[in-house]
Every structure is written in structure tokens, then in C-alpha cells.
Image 1 (cartoon, rainbow over the protein chains, first blue to last red):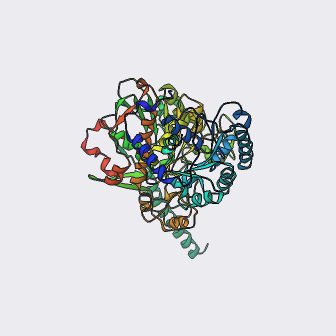
Image 2: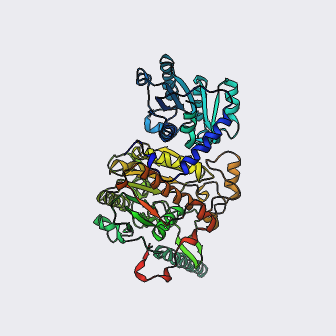
Image 3: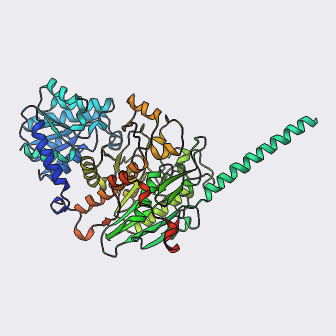
Length: 194
Length: 390
């Protein structure tokens, strides 16, 4: 299987979507967001597939290298030369069950990870990229409220903010909020912030 | 014995016999009903599951395997319907592919009724309709409504506790008849275990690259409108869900990881026990919700229910539910587009000689616009050798 597979895609619909998402991005950044620099490490607080989606979208936008590791630890982050850490929030019971973890252990891992990222001088992005489907229970809320205050900026998709929660929460935390139309546009949106 | 007592007993016996005859006739009509399927121009061969394992040869689960072979080297994909016959969007989507798909590269294998036994009876005490009908331009097409598990007539007795083979994980007793708890199967086990073993033999011997198992789920269940993906399928599933959500579906489709610790499910075991990447697709079916109202054919096909809608208003559902409901064309349309998009995404990740090219199958918008029946063919309008029965 090849990494740079997107070049061959004949169907132009994805690229049209990306362009649209990028345009939308500029209208949606409420506060000046920090520049995104690769290499990027992506992980999840809650073992949902959000990190895989961010990685795939970044690869599509050629925002490389971007590595995703749902079990990334502080030791695994140190000394690897990453410039940006993206942590997706919202939890998956299937995912946490598969990984033998729970939301409290996930939060503890993420807190250590962010400490290590600070030591390495990295930009930390808290993200919510799977919409309202990942805002249904107490575990989802716990992961969001653990990650966002530790982040330098907040990245979400439109569907995650249907009730305006993230708009209000980012103001409360005084963090820049980047809103992308959908998960497919994340890579292009981040590339624009380089 | 008093004459009056004898009379009461005789009348009771007579009434019982009448009920038995009426119910027995209905039961037999359901169990023996044959669903005609027109093999589309893309179908190049039809084999049966018994060709892959003698343990199912000649049984109720010796189902058809439809081969759509381009003759040009490429990927082999298996689209699998009918795991749970109470989820009709699955077998209807599979049938849509058999009757319409054309394959320009690679091979498409389709199973319409993966667990035929489970389609020969409905759930006890749930008042399911026995049949459902899809209107088409040439008349109604009739299908057997079914249950989640194989019929006890074909697999009996259930154990006190079902020990999954080979992991020995303890599961609920009736899950030994649940096709999505018996993967990767047991060659000498009960019927459902033998069935999944035969499918694994098919997957391994035909060198299947992508395995797609189609399902439906109640809106009260969190794994809803989603793709559950084995590790090998995570990249394909993630891109597919993002593209469909961004460009095609009004209601997003998500993605979940296949749990390693929960055994017997196809998205876990097919990936673990073969070279195939395995996925399950789920779509919303209000008929399955516990809180539903009248359980009839209209609910099954239109997906509209006041009680389920009310549950949604109270935030108790994991999928939106309004007056438009979840009609069968929407559910089949989502499955059809998800299969097609999965193949497109798979192709973008593979070298040209490892791809699969499929055309002729309508996507979501076209199915919603024209209705599902517009794409089913009249079995009386084709030669007999192109008609197969499920």
C-alpha cells in the first residue's frame, strides 16, 4: 500500500471539497491561530478514530510528515523532533475497550503527553473532529474538558459546534478557535495555517 | 366424565388444531418462500457455499455466491448481506449489486442471504411481519422478513453458555446461532459455526482483499451510521467516512475501531484469520428500536415511528429522527454509496494492477430520488438460467 496515493485520484470531488473547506476556514478563525508546523504527531484522548482521520486528511493535503499513534506516550514524543501535537477528543467505548483503557487513564496519559510537548516547545492543538456523535456522554465531555484547557488552540468541525458549545468554550478559555466545514478539510485548513 | 366436560375438551382440542393448522400453513409458506434474483449482466458464475465446506452442503445455509469477474487482474471484494435478516437494507443492497453491477477490473463476490436459516422465521413474541414488499415498475417484489439468529429448527439445542471457538470467550447462549458471533467458525460445530467456517474457507481460497458486512442498527445503539473497521481497514474506512460525510450524506457516517477483545464478529475475525481487510457498515433502522410503536411492514420500510421520534426529542438516540424517518431507499442508498466509496478509496491506496472497478450501481441520491424498486429487474422478463433463488 502506498502513502502518496492521492496524486493519482481521478475524481476531483475531494479537491473541490478541500478548496471549499479552506475558504471556509478563513471566515471561521475567531482569534489569530498559531502557525502549524510539521512534523506533526496526532493522538486521541478517548481512542476514537479522530486521530486517524486527521492523519489521513493531512496526508491528503500533503501536510507531512504527520504520524498518528493512539497510544502515544510522553516518552514516545520526546526527542522525535515533532513541532505540533494534535489531540483529538470525544471517546469511543469500542476503542477504549480494545485498547484496555478508560477515560481517566486516557486523561492521565494526555496530561503527561502535554507536559512533554511543552518541554519540547511544541504547539498543542485540541481537536474535536467527529461531530455531535462524539459529544453524547460524560466520557466525551471529560475528554474535551481535559484537553482544551491544555491546548494553544482549538480545532473543530462545524458539526461539533451545532449547539455553539465550542464557540462559547473557546471564548471562556480565551483560545483561538479554528472551525473547518468537515473532517475532510482539516488537512487543507491546517496547511493554510503553516 | 360428564358430557359437558367432554364437549368443552373436544371444542378446546378443535380450536387448538385450527390454530395449529393456520399457524403451520403460515409458517410453512414463510419457510419455503423463494426470493427470485436476476443475475445481472455482470454476473459470470454462481456457486454455493457448500462448494467451500461440505459441512453446509445441502443445508438451508448452502446459499448462493455470485461472482462478477472482469477477467482482468485486480482486487477481489466480497460484499456480504443477510447476516441478520431482520436488517433488510443489507440483503437488498447485496441484491442491488448482483442485479446492476458491472466489473471492469478485479472480481466482486456477493452474498445476499448469508444466514438463510435466520430468514426462515421471525422473532418470537415481537409481532414481526412475515414478508415485506418492494414496489417496482413491474409489480411488487416480495421478501422474507427474518430474525437475528438461525432458526432453532436448524440449530438445536443451544448451550447454557456459548463458548466462542477457538477463543473460548463466553457469550450469550443464543449467540451460537448469531452469524455475527460465530466467526471464524468451527468445521464440525452447529450450523451457524459451520456456516462462518465455510465463508472463511471461501475468503481464504478466493483470496478476498476486502470484506464488507452490511448491517442495520437501532437508533438507541451508539454504533450507528458508522463503519467498524479492522486495523487493516482503518485508513480506507477513515477516508471513506470523511468523503461521504463531506460530499454525499446529509447525516454523517462515522467510524469505529474493531475491538480486539470482543470475539466472533466479522470485522474482527475475518481480518484476523485471513488476508482480507474487514469492515461492517451500519445504518439506522427504527424498526429495531425497543421503544417503537406498531411493528409492521410500514415501519420496516418507511422507518417512521412516533415513539422513536419522541425518544429523539429527549436526546435518547444516536441518530437523528424526524417525520421523514429512515425509508428503505435511504438506508440502501447509504450502504450502496458506502460500498462504492470504499472501493474508490481502496483504489487510491493501491497500485493500478491491484484495483477493482465497479460501475452500474446507483448511489445514494439516485436511489432516494427514484426509489429502490426502480433498480430491481423483472424475473419473468429474462431467461430462466439468469434467475436464481434465495
